[in-house]
Structure formats: C-alpha cells, structure tokens
Image (tube, rainbow, N blue to C red; front, side, top):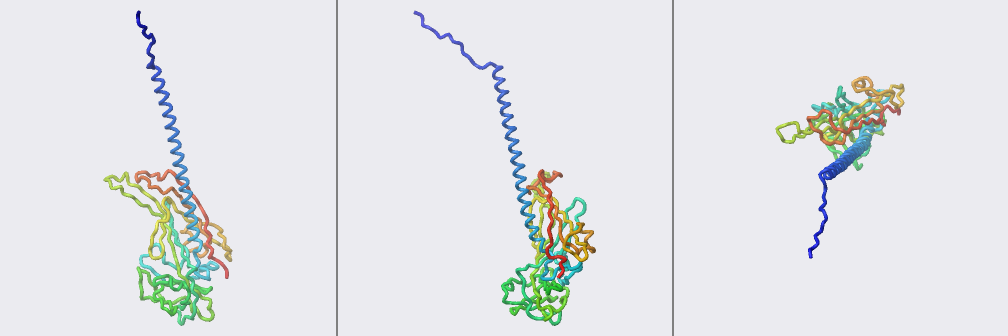
Length: 340
C-alpha cells in the first residue's frame, strides 16, 4: 500500500505584489510624515504667537504704568499753559542720555532711518511725599520736612528730591539728612558723578505764603533698544546668535533688560497746541520737531513696538526672526498742562 503524499503547492508574494506593497507603505509613511511636519509647524506658529501675545500684554501694561506719571513733580504740573515750572540744580557727568536732566519731564532721541528711538521720563513717587514744616530763609537753606512721616526713613543721601508748593518746582540731590527732618542740598558732595551745581531753589518753600509745600523723592527711566551677540565659542561667527531687547535705565545707573525680542522701538509725541491747553493731543510729531518748540506742550506719547518671541536668531541671517508682530498704543500723560 502506497502512502499518500500531500499535493498542495507552496504559495507566496510575487515580485509585483511586493513592489506594490512597498509603494503603498512609502505613500502611507510620506502622508504620515507630512501630517506630522504640518502639525509640528502649526504648533510652532501657535507657540510663537502665544509667546508674542504674552510679551505684548506685559510690555504694554508696564510701559503705561511707568510712562503715564511723567511730569508729576508734586502738586504743581511740570508744564502749565505751555511753560516749564521746573528749576533743577542736579547735574551728572557724562549723562549722555540726560537721565538726570530734571529740568525736563520728557525727553527723547530719534534713532534715524531704520533705527530705534529712545525715551526718558521723569516723575515723583507719591508714596515718598513729605510735608515741609518750616520756611526756607534764604533760598539756599535746607528744607525741613516731617521727620515722623514713614517715608522719611526711606530717604537716602544721593536721592533726587523735588519741592513743590503748587506754584513752582525745585529739584536737587539730597546731600545730607538729619534726624530733625533737615534735608540739605549743598554743592560739595558728588556721588557717582551726580551733584548739585547750585544751592538756590526757586523761592522760599515752606513760608507762610507757601505752607502747602511738599518734598517728594523722584524717579526717572530711559527706554532704549540694544542687541546682544552670543558667541558660540567657535572660530566661525556664522553660528553666533543675536537677540534684540528693550532695556530700562533708572536713577543710579541700573540698566535692566525688560523684554527680549523687541526688534524696533519708535516714539511719537502728541502735542496740545490749543490755547489755553485742554490736555488733548492735536497731532503727533517726532522728537526732532518737538525739541525746543513744543516740549512743554506734550500731552501723550504714541509707542510703536515690533515684537518677536525673543528667541536668538543666527547672526548670519539678515531677515531676523520669522515671527513678528507690530503694535501701537497711546499713553496719556496725566500730569501735564493742567490749569490750577
């Protein structure tokens, strides 16, 4: 008896079927890769946009808070009916940006074509207001304030002080502080290049006629744009990166980066040419037009910023960041041009 043997044929993929399967697999992989890259790009755009929006909210709120008090020097406005009310004796050597130029509440500079502007604002800090308690005789004598006031302990030699009696304003550097409330403003002392060029104030603050006089500590800030180059430590500069940032410099010379990714900073000055002034800006002009003509007519500022996410970009690339947004906002100066 013969044993039976299976008579089936072995089956497999033909070369054509294998090639079709490979092509279909490649098409599926290509489609999946395309979807992944598209999703990744969308996510990157959304992430960059969200970061820019966050930066916009931060810088707008901060600049409005710091710029809007410009011109507050006490109860007297720093400009009234287009005339300055400020007499400052403060001077600083090599103060190229004019941070210590307290004769002016607002100053700026034009960066020129394709360059950023700069802006400086000066204002009193109301939480450091001290009532004047005794008359000045003569005008170069010390100012006497309430030494029991909580703000008195916060004053330090070298602080910039203004005295205002709702009529005129005097600004000076504090050169000595006594326990009885005596604030001196002599010319002998110089701190970090800051000093008083004279001792006479505007008039006799604290006399019976000016009994409402108040001494207040001052602050000032300059906004400017600057770029930082990060050297990667290789012989070539092609892999170095550049970051453009907005900086703030305050009294005492403290320069601080306040926002990375600011690509441009422009300022226009709203002037009130109504006579008498009504506190409303009639038109906006650049600083070169303001300087010497309309400085005491500034009622608001128009700030224009070009903002990116703040990520460093290759130094070799001239186009800068891929994602940018341009914003513009108005800051009303609350303490300018008011009639008493």
